[in-house]
Image 1 (cartoon, helix red, strand yellow):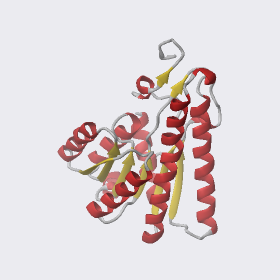
Image 2 (tube, rainbow, N blue to C red):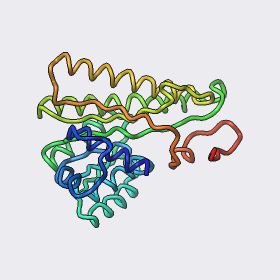
Image 3 (cartoon, one colour):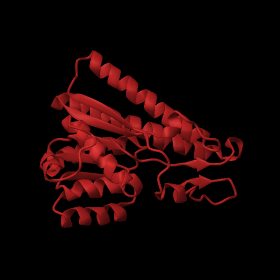
Image 4 (cartoon, one colour):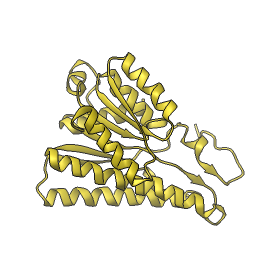
Length: 238
């Protein structure tokens, strides 16, 4: 349900329609044929959004490091009548993100929505988490978003329109103990995105929209993949 709501919110923002509208024939008509690029599409919210968009026959560009998972998602999208392009990408590498943008344009000629959803976590006392894990987190969660945003805005300015969606977190406003670097990265994503939006408005780029999505904790593989230095297992609160 959460991932369906996120997909609907992304599309609704693009089309300047009501974000609470229910998915249906009208929504499919608006989504069909539009191109959505999802960085971080191999699992979690990114995969959920990709599969949902595929059901509405969108063109979906799938980017992440794990090619085999992207191919699996692409097959699902094709089965449901959508189109999919797989571009193996490490979002922390600006050259690979630039290649992602090129491949998307070669495949579909335009990008309507660029969605930055890649993210990693490191859970534990700040001083007990190795520097390498902290640095990797910032490289993916913040720099990856920035690299993607740079490419997206360059494309949107040439097109004259587009929607950039950056995945933040409620942690950006309510930081959590044992997630200091993660909370900091999401606060930076929020600040970066809001500032970018202000700059576009001042530049009268009214048809380029910036969206920051800030979900609460969602049951995804993020919690399994996060570097965990607490010595305890995560569990659901409810």
